[in-house]
Length: 304
Image 1 (cartoon, rainbow, N blue to C red):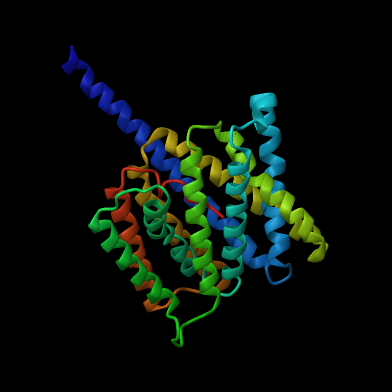
Image 2 (cartoon, helix red, strand yellow; image 1 turned 90 degrees about the horizontal axis):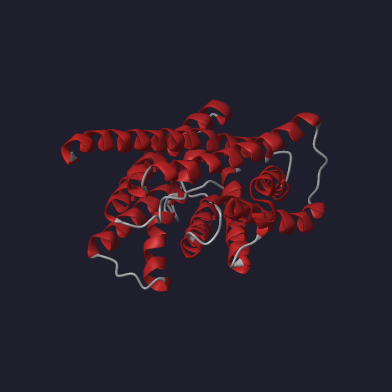
């Protein structure tokens, strides 16, 4: 009897895994459009206004949906302070990342963001008291070399905006760390709502100082920017309901390819040879860490 059921169970598992992979790849193909729209609008509008639009319209879409699905429980959580802090970390990450892509190629910036996997190794040892194997410390050191190849401090290819991308990676690593602490303690839509409410409230207080009334076309682009981000997050969350993090993590790097395509398509910029070499190093290290790590540390990328 057991022998008769094993092939069927395996086939069912494989089908679920394929669904998870497809959903993740779709998310990684959609989210770069949000960043490309933000980069295109950054010449006319401040980063502060664009970040406000990203969180405001995200909240405007997700909050009603959460209320419809969960009613009064939509904003009830055992740790509201940590949930709000998590959202503010994503806000800081988004602001730094979009500030960087105003000046440097999309692929360069997103590759530096993926350095969060390496930063997370150090944070896990510091805050979670995890015992980090030597091979992960070695891989983290190699990942740092990859970042240096892209940023090139003190050399002709250096641009200060690369440091904003590095700051975004640090904020995102802290965001992932806070996500670990909240794992299983709230409904996914509740967490997604809190993810946007902090940024929405803070940026609503700040945006009047930077406000420029958008044209109708630009307003539509801002809404589209936020909706693509929300859609990407939902697809990402769903993908991890079908497959484990270690299986999906390597496919996260599809985003770098899409960012490079959009960067060249819309802005005519491509990473140079040194940057491509650094990107290759970071991707290789990230995949290695995802394979040797049994946690979900890399699994919830994001999508600023």
